Length: 195
Image (cartoon, rainbow, N blue to C red; front, top):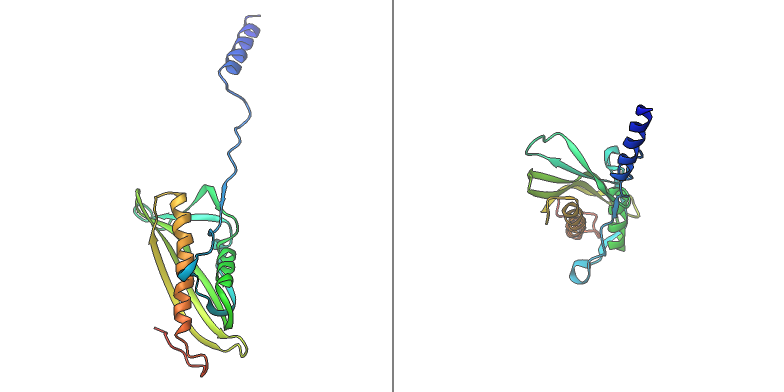
C-alpha cells in the first residue's frame, strides 16, 4: 500500500513539475534562399543563355555548412536549425540563369566549396570556390576555363551570418564570371581573360 501511495505521489509531482514522458519536438528548420536579385548596376545582364551547375555529392543537399579551422580544420559541421530551401547547386544555377541575357555562351560551373569558415569562435567568413567553363552555344566548343575563389566576412559568426555572406558571394560569383566572359572575343572564337 505504501508503495502504491509513493508511486502515485511521484506521478502527481512529476506532472505538476511539467515533466513529460514524450520527447519535445524541435522546431522546424528555418529555410533560406539567396534573397532577391540585385537591382541597378549590380544587375547587368551576362552573355550567356544557359548555365549548368554541378557539385560533388556532399554539396547536393540543403544543409548550411561551416568549418572551425581554429580547432579542427578537417571537420565539417552543419547548422541544424537553418537550411537552404534547395541544394546550393540548384540555387546557384537558377541565380546564374536569371542573370543571363540569352547571349552566345553556355557556362558550366563545378561548385567545389560553399561554406562558412571560422578562424576563431567570434569571427567567420563565407567561401565559394568553383571552376567555370565557357562554351560557344552553337558549336559547343570550349572557349575557356577558370577557377574562382571568393570570400566575404560574415556579418555575424552564426547561421544568419553564413546565409547573408554566402548569398552575397553568389552574386559576387556571377559578377566575376560575367566580367571574365565579357573579356572573350566571341566573334573570332579567341579567348581573353584567362589567367
